[in-house]
Image (cartoon, rainbow, N blue to C red):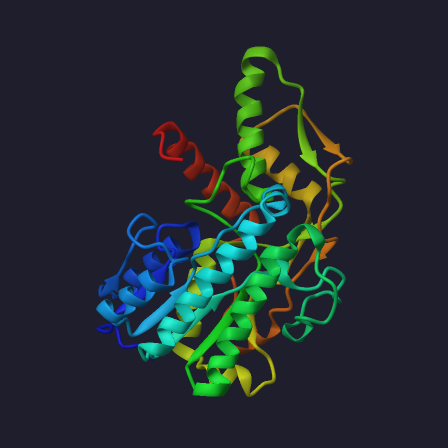
Length: 325
């Protein structure tokens, strides 16, 4: 069990994932947080990160900081996605080792599994085949982070391990159409189309690809709950002794992009058509996580996809009106 009096550093605490994790730990009675914003600490700067760890000496570290984006951003800014993520994770994991951090949890992503790995994706499938090209730089960086945690455990006994979340959505998501993931992008597209149709009757919303790829989605508050559960229950030894490097976190259920689009259309209240632009890439055909290990440990998700999208849309509307997006 974690000691609630000890110091917790959540790298990326202002992002969708990091902020959800901090809210969860606060709700459980943690109040000894150490935080730095992007403006206060550049995690790509090794000297700055080293200095920060030497000053603050956190006991627990959760690495939720990363450069992230959808297909367009990943495929356009390939060098940035590789370099930035390599530097962020390398600096944090090494500094945590140097400063005797008691426990570190690193977040990977389901999109780093091989493109054609058998479904559902088992933990053992990592590095078993070719990666999806549009996502390759980000995936290579994240795989390196997972292997860093494993290697620091095997060489030094550091209590560092990784989790592999599925596609996430929720409060504080990125709704920029040039860099967002599919679900928040669709929420924004349908919302704006609904508003425009009141004026000039926009008759369709364009969705990238064929609509046939299947994706699994998890509400970010459920992810935070899973991380709190694992941080209290699991140590690095428990994972590596099983011959794996990480634990999958997801719902264990998937839907097609077309089904997601139709659900968002219903929730937003849009009455036009959905058009699929088949000239745009689909990405990986399917990404469903095998979450049997996590379920066996005693954790399952609780927020349905429809309930989660309704909550995400409510947050989007409220924060868009207030100019906070």
